[in-house]
Image (cartoon, rainbow, N blue to C red; front, side):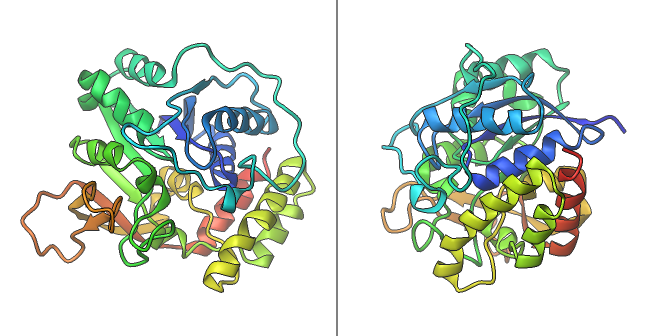
Length: 313
């Protein structure tokens, strides 16, 4: 089977970085057509910088990286330096990237690519706020039926929120964008906190990265060492969830995940529950099903895949 063609839309973030590395380490399964950066975990100047740092770490300075939207569609930007550090990739020291940032706006790249590639052959993989994707849909609605699938990290149901009591960060940052994407009638697979919180960075799993004896292995171990401190203190867990690589792992080994096709609506009116992914898990409404919401992961298989693929870099 031919590799899946994808566009990664991202706001790195240590876990975003691991997702990008996993994709670039898996050419037999995934062809990355380009990577678009969006404001989210940190502002856009840092997310586009971090994306290029990760591409260079993977030995892919040829990868096209684009800067997209620097603010949500209707709101002030909320960031997460309290989790990821002031650069978004705090932990080890990293030099500035030397590879270029593309001149084209990320939204225009998404539009142009979906128009150029055969219809139904490109998967979008957003692992940050959905601003770039929704802006592309608003600007060029003709691209929507050309998308093969959207596989995103965002939302929560049983696990509720991580930035407010009811909302997951990526959806909360730009709920209006999320509402557009979830309402677009594109095949949609969602990796929520319910899944990612089952995939914790235990000490043996981090040690396995460091045991690779490579620059990538050392970097991923250092990132996860830094990243997990916040979640361990917050949740009292053994480690931290690696949220965003779940999307790429699903594209490579979908059998690692289980979920249910349900209706998901995005709350954009209530300040109390702003950004909540209102998930009809028990199918108690007649609202049309619009997303496959994953709620189980084979965590051991997920980390085995990560370790095996990252060891290639």
